[in-house]
Image (tube, rainbow, N blue to C red; front, side, top):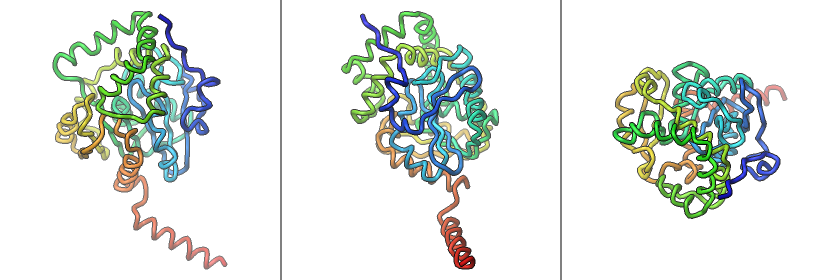
Amino acid sequence: MTSGRDLDWNRDGPDWPNAVHSRFVRAGRLRWHVQVAGAGPGLLLLHGTGASTHSWAGMVEELARDFTVVSPDLPGHGFTGAASQYGLSLPGMAHGIAELVDALEVRPAMGVGHSAGAAILARCTLDRRPSLRALVSLNGALVPFAGVAGRLFSPLAKLMAINPVTPGFLSWRLSRPEAFGRLIASTGSSVDPSSAALYRRLASSPRHVAGALGMMANWDLRRLARELPELGIPLLLVAAAGDRTVPPGQAADLAGRIPSARLETLPWGGHLAHEERPAEIAALIRRVARESGVLPAPGDMAASCLENKMDTRTVN
């Protein structure tokens, strides 16, 4: 068996999506890979377990027209350095994100999280670090798995994570097109060939696989699930009807429990819906930003443009 190679920016970075916006930032104990693009209110994008900044590739430039978009690789993922067990836990991840935005001197007004990324942003909001004004959860993994899966998930991940052979073996297995194809299909999504190739490159990196396993092993959503009703900011729960990873009914249950939440069910797409139709998800994000006051409403924008024109005429 020959395991894959860990990602290296000098080798793998030049053709990484939106590499022009990439930078490396030291925050806390980690060297983070983060992409920063655009101008306007801060918009923090957090990917899910096993993904990277590439997950937002189809919408970064679109969103950068209105926002300062901040998209990091989570600890242990992609090109961001490996973290301790605490750093891979939910509170540890939230603390790390707070350190990163402080180092960047960006004040995010809004957050968008996919899967586990939504849980991290919810934890950040409850801790008020950073203090967000609106949150969008894309197929968010916000509560523990139910039944037998919930009882086995973390212990099994722990057993796999502590075995030093596991990351190399899994990266070798997932680098094979047939195995990786089955994994993507299991999410209920179909991604384009370029995205699939990037996922395979990530999965071929033992360091990235170790980061994903470590995150799963240290993940505990019980406290978050209890505290979600206290969120206190507008929360849009987006659930794709074809999601085979996070049951869409979970979002419906949460919408009934969280006073500030509302539900939007997509009749299309699977767990990676934001990669399947990025333009539609970007439009949804922009709509939430306007509804919550993060961006001006269309009428306010028109009035502002008219005022600017009048000021110009006065000066001339």
